[in-house]
Length: 163
Image (cartoon, rainbow, N blue to C red; front, side, top):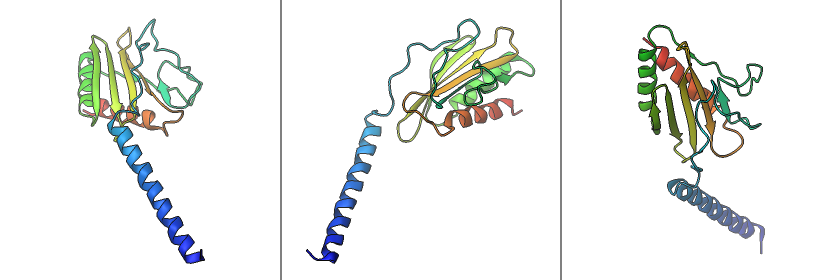
């Protein structure tokens, strides 16, 4: 085979492989293969969320403050806690691809899905003294989340704090 023909065949094979990979990714997302399983150990107990693992794909306001990778500040409540809670509920509900799975007095579990079908679980809990809303948000699958959970929580914080 001459060099130009080898290049053409190689290009066609690479294009076919790329197309197959894209189709597999699309089908995987549409079939829910990237959503993972809903955790069964969520909740706010004894003033804290469940402890996390070593993976850098989650943040929590109840993680140790010296854990810069995982710690995120709770939402400070200035004013009426009922208004802050309602603002949080509305901000979550207005987020594209967000679903509130559980809504109890002082606790919300929401799922946030990406366009590719990956799902993150976020929990929000009113502090026992009503001074803050604690938060935990983490990816179900993978090791890294590329800061998506931290960014999402900060965006919700800004929307809740807005007048």
